[in-house]
Length: 260
Ligand code: IPE
Ligand code: IPE
Ligand code: MG
Image 1 (cartoon, helix red, strand yellow):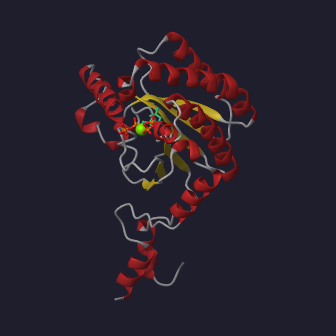
Image 2 (tube, rainbow, N blue to C red; image 1 turned 90 degrees about the vertical axis):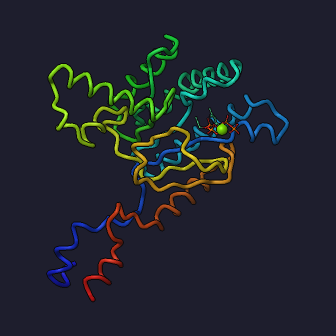
């Protein structure tokens, strides 16, 4: 700090160097392939995926992460065979039933994002129960993306804005990026710093398209049931090496420029 006026002026424009991610989002992919590789039914992969999720939540608490988002079921996942959809819903049910007490004991706040309308009443009630039981907790926020699709989320925000304009409560010129962000399911959640996708696939599959604008992406060649604490730690170490520029300049670049 403070080695000259020019640098002082330049300082606020510098992107912060990344260290620990505040918000990590996980695309938990590869359960089916994990099972197929072992000659097991896909369901078994999903079941083991829940074990991996439980361990990952514990690790996130230990690592001091503020927000952990997990993509558990996409709007497109309804197109899978009904038996598989049923088994995924049953696992969600079991996870909340069995793990809510531990989450509560660990001061975890659960928040669910995704479309709630049209869900079976017992699923909606369960999601609401998880949120309400833990809403006063102040530790890790576990964001469960269930029946989630980013395009659907953005579309709903656009519709909400249109309704407000039509009702005369909002002027079109007041619609800015903040106005849109405030109408997304993630309104009170910071953007993810790091998005990890397991299984080796390199795509977002309709996940957090708006919020991912400046997220660091990491694709790991491990199927989700095998994702370990060590893999998680390695992902966080990888993140710490990244230069996040947000369209600005890295600190080194800025110094080079002001020196010439
Ligand atoms: C992720 O594993 C779980 C969900 C999408 C619900 P997959 O079921 O997609 O596993 P693969 O990709 O077929 O291996
Ligand atoms: C994304 O995985 C959804 C979840 C992890 C819940 P998919 O397996 O559904 O994505 P695609 O079909 O490979 O893109
Ligand atoms: Mg998949």
